[in-house]
Image 1 (cartoon, rainbow, N blue to C red):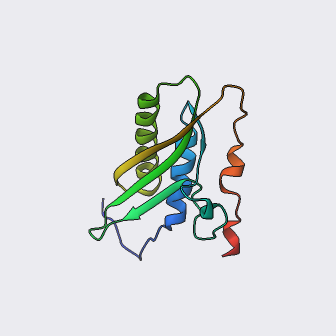
Image 2 (tube, rainbow, N blue to C red):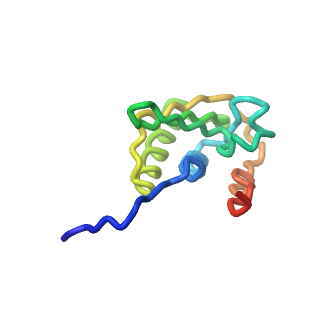
Image 3 (cartoon, rainbow, N blue to C red):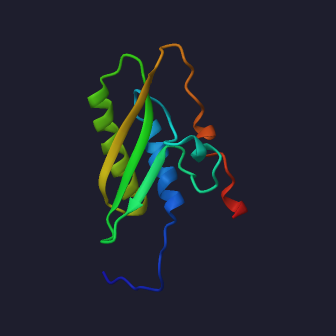
Length: 129
């Protein structure tokens, strides 16, 4: 089978942030994502809501994810599952290999705290750019 190159495919970092955020929040035991800085909550620059992607000069992409976990979960096991889920989702959907997936546990949420809706994770309208 031959493949023909007709042009270039460019995937926005914003798309990778959304994929990363959704994959992380779908892991059992994750309550929600958390912005690293308070200013990120108000900034148009930070779309990831707790997801920060970095591209090194050699082209390697790494992810830092800041999460709250639910009370009673095995923290190391959930963290490893987040790493696997994110790495797999990014590769499956965008064919981008992440060199590192760093999980930062911000806190543990009490048992009866309702989990935020997935829709609230990335509220901005992607068509308004």
